[in-house]
Image 1 (cartoon, protein in one colour):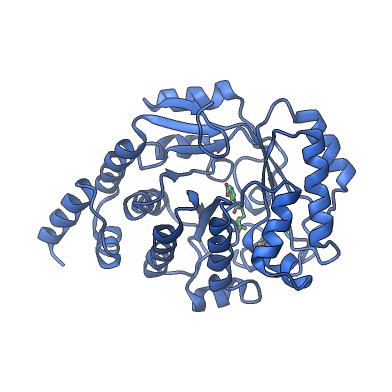
Image 2 (tube, helix red, strand yellow):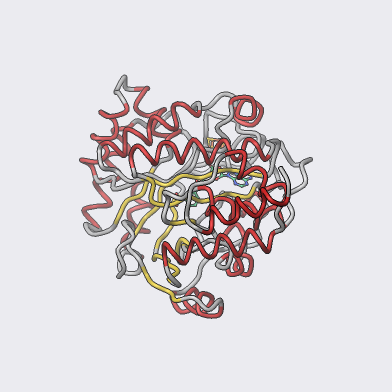
Length: 357
Ligand code: V47
Ligand code: SF4
C-alpha cells in the first residue's frame, strides 16, 4: 500500500465507514501516532461527544490461588508468591463498609478448585442482601468456564444460576490474545479463545452484558492484535452485548515473561487509537488507570478513550504485583473529574449499564 492508500483509509475512517483488517494493519504500521490519535478522537466525539464517563467501584479479588499458570501472571500464588483467601465474611464486612460509596463491585480472582459455583452464588446472594442496589460485575469467562464445567452445567445454566443469585454483568478478563499459537505460548492450559467468545455470546443472548479485553505487548505480533479486535467486532455485530473494550498493557515484573521489554508509549497510544477506529460497534473504550497511571490515562482521552473505569479503591493487586505505578489505586470523584476537565472533556458519572447518574 502507498501514501494514497493511507489517505483513503483515513478518509474512510473519518467518514465513519468500517475499515478492514488489512487497512487497520497498514495504519498500525505506517501512520504516526498523532494522525491515529486525531482520527480516533473524531470517531470518539461522534459517538460520545466530549463526555468521559467513570463510575464509583471497588475491585475485590477473593483469592489468588489458581489452578492455571499463565506466563504473564504476577498475581497467582504460583512460583512461590504468597497466597490469600478472603472469607465470605471478610468480603461482606468490606461491602458493608463501602456500600454507600460505590455503585459497582467487580469480583475476579484465581481459579480456585476448592470453591464451587454454589459457593460463589451464595457469596453473591449475601452481597445483595447487604447492598441490594449494588451492581455485581463478576467472574471472567475463564472462571465461569471452570465453575460451570465442574458441575456439569452448560454455560447457559451456569450463567442463569449466577444471575438468579445476583450476577449483573461479566468483566472482560481472560481474553488475552485469541490467536491459538500465541495463546498456547502464554496461557496454554486455560480456556480457549473459542470458549471465551462462546461464554460471552451466551451471556449476551441471556441479556447479561459484558466487557472485552486484550492483553497486548508480550509475544504477539500486530497481526494478532488486529485479529483479536476483528473477532470481537464480529461477535459484537451479532449480539451487541459488549459494553466496553479495555486494552491491557502487559506489565513485566515478577512473572515468567519478565525478560520481555514492555511496550513503548507510542505503541500504547497507537493501540488505543486503533481499537477506537476498528471497533466501530463498541461505544466505550476504557483506559484502566490503575495499570496505566493517571497521566497516561488522561492523555489517552485524546486518543479515543471515553471511559476511565472508576474510583476503584486500594484493593486491586493484579497490576501492582506486575509492576504498575499505582500501588494503592484510589481516586476520589473530585480527582477523577479534575483529570477529565483538564483534558477539555466533560466528566459524567455513569452506572454499570452506562446510564448517566
Ligand atoms: O485477564 C494479568 C490481565 C486481566 C497481567 O471488565 C495483566 O471492566 C497486564 O480483565 N500485565 C484481568 N495485564 C483484569 C481485567 C479487567 C481489568 C479492569 C477492568 C475490567 C473490566 C477487566 O488482567 C487478565 C489479564 O489479561 N493481566 N496479568 C500483567 N502482568
Ligand atoms: Fe490464574 Fe488469572 Fe493468573 Fe491466569 S491470569 S494464572 S487464570 S489468576
